[in-house]
Amino acid sequence: MTLARRIIPCLDVDAGRVVKGIEFAGLRDIGDPAELAARYNREGADEIVVLDISASVEGRVTFLETIRFVAAQLNIPLTAGGGIRKMEDGRAVLRAGADKVTVNTAAIERPQLISELSQQFGAQAVVLSLDVKRKGDSWEAYARGGREATGRDAAEWAAEAVSRGAGEILVTSIDKDGTRSGFDCELTAKIAASVSVPVIASGGASTFDNFYDVFTAGSADAALAASIFHEETHSISALKTFLSQRGVPIRMSR
Amino acid sequence: MKISIVDYGAGNLPSVERALRGLGAETKRATEPNHMDGAEAIVLPGVGHFAAFVAGLRERNLTDSLRAANNAGVPILGICLGLQAMFASSEEAPGESGLGFFPQEIYALPANVKSPHIGWNQVRLTRESSLLRGIPANAYFYFAHSFAAPAAAESTVAACDHGFPFAAVIESGNLRGVQFHPEKSGETGAQVLRNFLESIQ
View 1: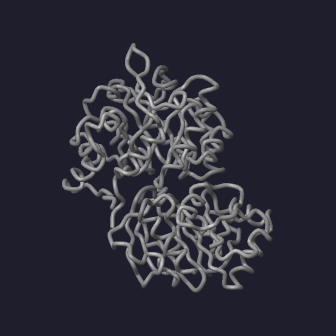
View 2: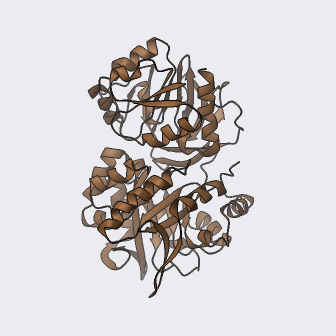
View 3: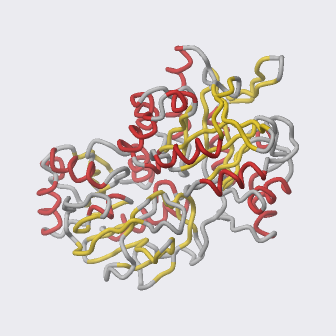
């Protein structure tokens, strides 16, 4: 009897569409969020994350619709976030059908937001999204989609967030994101050793071996990826079979 | 099949409703005591804090109707915090009373394991279970909780281990409870709900 390591596809959503950010070239359309979510649900995903990356007010309203459409396709957990600034934003996301809400920049500016959400909805519903860049021998937390250095040590911030009631940490390596050079296992191991809650690794996934490494050397409880699943170069079921054969505890769906 | 889903003011009810309707049940949210009248079964879903849950039930005058329904033998299925609320009390909210259908206390998961216990885990049968009928022994269920009922509770039919052996599934007379989320546990979870619906027909 073992808690399985989770495979989590991530949908970055702008104006109701799943998109992929391309450096200096804006956004590329990937597809319909509900259709993709349904496909990943079928293929054995353990959970789905949807992140609102739209900057506009209209985008925010559309995002709640997107959560409703996506949730209707799933019989697995759904995590949603992006731009959550206050308790009511969190409530709206959860009422729309998400099981958990992620917080990032607003929590850095006002850590009390984590306490408020956790008291209201429970620690199991609050995920700290942590964007991190390596800085010498340590790691620094970044805000505003990885654009703004906060001066805060990532592991220390993660520990504070947990003491305030965050139930999971989604840690994204800015250095690795989009590079396809594998997860930053050192980073996830460091965060995992600093907190008493599950850690979701993100940024850099490319090969099946990358996932194996982050679940072993990286001590991650879950691994998140977007592009490699969207492009259908890797199916979730093939990845899970690979990991299971290598001895990683994995839920093989029937 | 008319199922009353208790709405205490928080929690993600749509996914429970969708799952039950998908299996052919007719669901209705109960926010007032008389909303449970005529229900063939009651589902008590819940997430969040034990104190908020029992206070939510109390404020809506649902506590007494749930107790009356239990006394009348109406099948009741508690999910996650809904299972915990069926017990007498919880370490999460000292001084607060649960529904008291079971006399034991709910305990916090210990500090030597990750808490919340979030993710897919397996359970082991301790007795014959109607909710787990037809489900393979190694199947996974989705858990998301920081507190649990000790597996020693005599209503336990399946246990899970995380810090201590806890009750993953309870069954006793008209009462059923699952610590995991069947509505989030894929096809396996759907089978649990199907078994519940079949058991009350």
